[in-house]
Structure formats: structure tokens, C-alpha cells
Image (cartoon, rainbow, N blue to C red; front, side, top):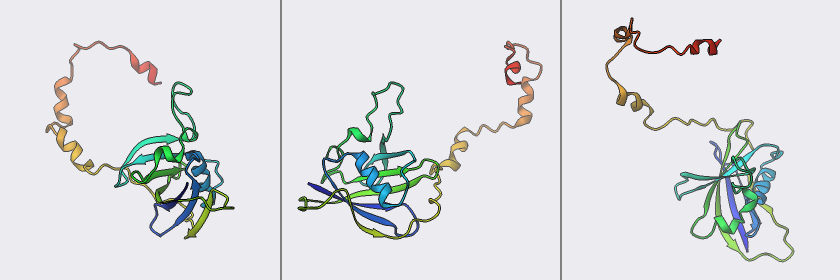
Length: 179
């Protein structure tokens, strides 16, 4: 079977590519198809992230094994597309280049029979030009302003005077390590 994906760049303008790829190809094959269709050189690290129906990020599937024990972590080449995506699970997030954080929403749009003579993967449609820079990401929590309120105790620097002259603690001499 052929999986047809719409790969949308997370940007202010509509920039997307439609890609057809075989269902038994791997996530690494999809990674290659995506970076080629968007004009990247493929020299940067990338990851896919499983997600729910509302694009909430879940598990990471990286290009390379970054685990503590070699071979313990499954990577893109270990997953066939059909292992991760089907009629029920149609969405996955793709991040290319962790410095610039090019982020793509990848959605399975159709599952069709393979066309005779077609070569896969194939970019079926291209819309929009890549911007020079990725959209800046803001990783601030929704309730960041409320965080410190929870720990507000009403103490200020003057209140710390109560510890002056208290020699009841042992000095381990760690200051020498900071030089």
C-alpha cells in the first residue's frame, strides 16, 4: 500500500508538501523524503514524535541511538510506517535541526493501492517557499506566571539576617572548587 502524507511546516504562511511513500518503508525513509522535498541538505539531526489527535507530543523516535546502552533505544530505521501510522493513528510530528527547530506536522491523508510504474517515495505536490529562518519557538509553560506564587512565603533579603552568626553548620570548604 501507499501512504500519502501532507507535511506542513509550522510557520505563519502555508508551506507544505504532499509525499507518497510505501507503507513498509521506514520512518528513516520518510525523514529522507521530507528533508529532500523541503530542500534541506540532510546533515542535521532529526526526530519524529508520536502525538495524539490534537498534536500533543508524546514519544520521541530519533534518527540515531542516543541511549546509554547501545542498541537499547529503537530508532527511525527500526519502525515501518505501518507500525506507527494507520487509519486510527494519522498524526506524527517531525523536527529537523535541533538548533533551528524546523517543526513539521505530518498527517496521513490517504492509503491507496500502489500505482504501476510509480517510484516511491515521491513528492506529489509542493506549496510555498521555505523561509530563511524557522519560526521561533516559545517553550514557556501556560502557568509560568503562577509558578512562583505557589512558593511565595513573604520573606525577603532582610529576613535572611536571622542566619547571620550561625556557626551550627559544617563548612566543607567547597569554595576552593569554584576558583
